[in-house]
Image (cartoon, rainbow, N blue to C red; front, side, top):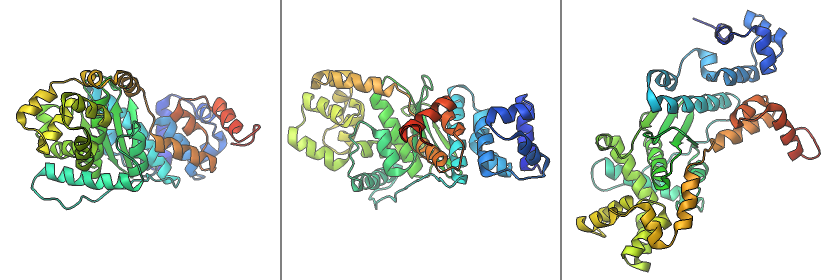
Length: 368
């Protein structure tokens, strides 16, 4: 069985760099690195974190040689899914490294409320009610514009948004202590928001502990999967809580304009709202068919909310780094448990420029 030294030596050999070139690139001491590779000394946690970051491997693999399923999936899947998995693998590897440094994923799951009825849809609805309670306990609302930030704060999973291309909505990755939701940038904010809630449903239900891919959450074949039915039911009930929705309807009634306004208020598509109202028996199948024909932009126009809709379209096309990962990577650096390189790499920043920026934040060029 290979040792830590063997695995580090193999990574450096595969890079095409000499040991001294690698040491200089990563700001490690060349003599000490040589001793560690030769077995005369042991690697420190900080040194392993730097090496893991440089080669985009997990600390767990460096320490044990066990390759995570997510890494295997990233190599064996093709197309847009492979791109998404590669991005997720990088973020998960970083989280695993932080866990080793004493910064575990602050995951806060919920237990589903007792529910009546059978089937996966009932399970998803019950789970959504528990998730709503968790949101309310922190005095937050799911109708906030920054749903990714809310989900990170309440449930402790990282949320990232990257340009993954058409035909791929998102994924949920779990395992090795990491919880991650990865979404694709889009010009359809309501779809991105539903995908986010859908992936949260997968994580809270413990679906596919390693990785759950959703190339198209509205694909008919995919929706036949029981876990997809549960995740869709969760997303619908989470984004459109029954009590809040009924209160809104009592206040304004249900008209063509009020329906459009509710789509904007809850930030969902007309189709999602129509099916939710059908499920709650507020409208019948004929009413559902009529309302769901409306597009999201038409709803914004009817409600007089075009400018708000355009801002949301712009926002849904923006990338987002995993907020908790950035926070903990910076905390590890400031606590002296990691070098600045992992944070600079995560932010896509120059190390020296970032060091100066952090120093200025601490006042007059003080130590960051």
